Amino acid sequence: KQEVTQIPAALSVPEGENLVLNCSFTDSAIYNLQWFRQDPGKGLTSLLLIQSSQREQTSGRLNASLDKSSGRSTLYIAASQPGDSATYLCAVRPVAGNQFYFGTGTSLTVIP
Amino acid sequence: GAGVSQSPSNKVTEKGKDVELRCDPISGHTALYWYRQSLGQGLEFLIYFQGNSAPDKSGLPSDRFSAERTGGSVSTLTIQRTQQEDSAVYLCASTSGGAVSGNTIYFGEGSWLTVV
Figure (cartoon, each protein chain N blue to C red):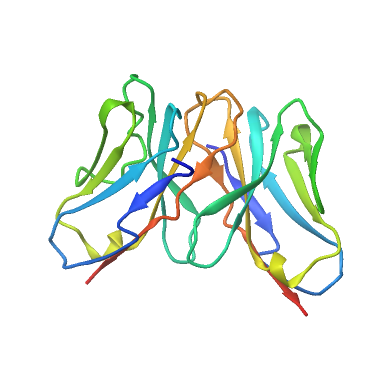
C-alpha cells in the first residue's frame, strides 16, 4: 500500500523567506503527483501537477520537483507572503488502483 | 458548473439518524471521488466513480455507507444510522479523464458532518 509522508508537519517563517516543503512516498510506480493548498474550513485547491515523466513544474512563485525513483517531491515557495499561510498537501496517483493517496499535510504560517 | 458543488455545507445530526450528502461535479467530468477528512487526520478514500463502470467501493468503512451516481453526474453519499465517529468533512472531487489521464483533480468545499 502506498504511504505518503510530509515533513515538517508545521512550519512558521517570516515574510519574504524562501521555503521548501517535503513529500515522500513509498511506491515509485505512480502516474502523477499533485500539490494542493487547503485553507481553514475550505476544500483543496490544486497548485501543481507533475506527471511521472516530468522532473518539475512551476507556477508563479511555486516550483515543484519530482524524483520518482527516490520517492520524493519538494514544493519550493519563493518570497513567502502572509497569504501563503495554509495547509499544503501532496497526493500521488499510483499505477495500481483508483485512488489518490494523500499526505497529512504541512501547516504553514507566514508571519508579517 | 464552474466548480464542484457540495451540499449541505454543514450538517448536525443525532446519532442513529440517516444523512445524505450531495455532490455536483464539474460539467463533463467523468470521474468522481468521495474522500473523508477527520480532524487532524489525512484524507481517507471512500469511493470512486468512472463513467458507466462499476464504482470502486473499496474505501467505504462499513455497510452503513453507500453512494450512487445518477446519470453520470450528481452523486449522493448516504450514511445510515450515523455514529459519532462519522463526524468529519466529506469531500467530493472530480476530474475530466479516467484515473490514468493525469488531469488535475478538483475538490468541492466539503460537507461538514457533526453527529451528536
